[in-house]
Length: 289
Image (spheres, rainbow, N blue to C red):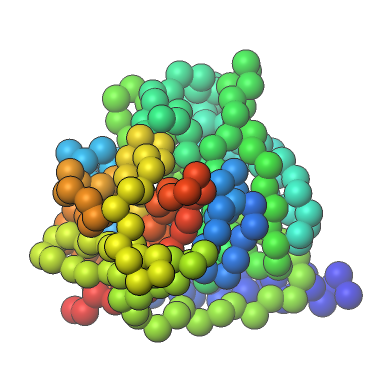
C-alpha cells in the first residue's frame, strides 16, 4: 500500500512540475473551501511589499521580481523546516526557522497586523486553507500545530516583516497517500459559510465584499488582527501569493485594493470575524487576457 501511495504522490509532484512550467509566466475544523475557523481560528494573484492599507501591494514581487511565495529563499532570507512530511489527519508540529544570508537564525521580526509571523497553508489544488500564527522559541525557531487532513502536496507560506521589508517564503509539505486533485471551483460572486452569505463585487483595481446573515447586511463585524477583514489571493498553477488588508471604506462593505492582476485564475480567501468567531469565505476569480 505504501509503495502505491508513494507512486501516487510522485506522479502528482511530476504533474505539478509541468503545471509550474506553464504557469510561471502567468503567478480547526478545516473544510474543502477553507470555511469555518481554520487553524488557530479553525478555518487564488500577483505576488511581496506592503501597500498603504497595510497589506501586500498589488505587485507583490520578491527581490528578483519573482512572485511572492513561489520560492523558499529571496531577499537574503531562507525558510528551513524541521520536516516536510506529515501523516494525513494527524496533528503534528510544523517547526521552521528563517535564516539570513549567513545561515544564521533570524530572531528579530516586526509586528504586522498584530502578529510577528503569519503562516498560510493550502493544498496545491487550492483547497484545505488554514491561517496560523506560530510561537517563536528563544532560539528563534517558530512552531505551530498543524493538521493536514488528506493526502496531497500542500504549500506553506511564511509571511513576515524584517528590517522594514515584507517577505513571503514558501515551501511544499507532503502527505503520502492516494490523491486526486479537485478542479478549481467555477467562478462565482457568492459564497456561503457558517450561515453567512458573502457577495463579491469588483471595481477597477479593487474587490469588495458584503456579508449577510438571514438576508440582512452585517454591519457590526469585529476586528480580526486589527482590521475588519483579511484577504489572501493565490494564483492557480504557481500559487503566487498576495495578502491584502482592507481599505478605509465604511461598513458594511469590506474593500481591498488589489491592483492590476495578471491574467489567470485565482482563489480568494476572505476572513472576517463576527460573533466572536473567524469565518473564511472562498471565491474563484478569473482574470481574462
